[in-house]
Length: 221
Image 1: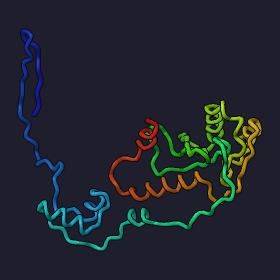
Image 2 (image 1 turned 135 degrees about the vertical axis):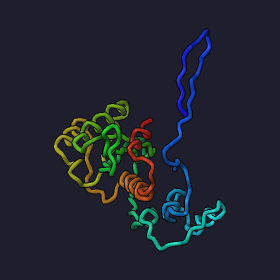
Image 3 (image 1 turned 90 degrees about the vertical axis):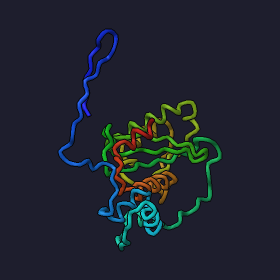
Image 4 (image 1 turned 45 degrees about the horizontal axis):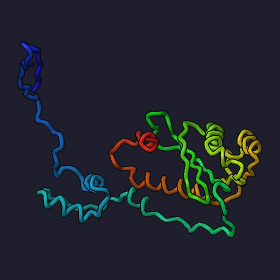
């Protein structure tokens, strides 16, 4: 249906005509032509037997298949237990963990492919900053230290893995300026656990058709 209108004596007069499509509309139609795996993903990766029951209740008979769902396998995957540390911080911001997660498979609408997560080990407060390239890690570190300036004098250690992004000369220079000791020898920092959980979540939901380009912008908002 198409319509146009104009204002006549304070009234809106509509001229309406019906548009008959050349082919039948195929929007939001559920058919048994679609594979069980498609419905398995649409219904949040539920058990396929349950999916078949739900579809049968709505008049769609679907045969089971042995398709291996990579999303379910990745979401249920387990890793080895993390070790425990003998000493823990006793005050807020005494130790800051830091890690860079990325690159993401999708670039956000704002050009983001990485994020830097900097949680406080004592309070568990986390600050997440999104970046387009790893070279922006220094800027993120400076922004974080500026935001916590009233408490920055209490920061003693920055705990991270031994990747080059935190061993760069520019990063070392910023830490030295604030009197913070870098620790690059943690096998698994608390932040990396957070990063791994995020990666696992993205893998588990990788087959959904919803756009992933808005993830960073939704998180910021």
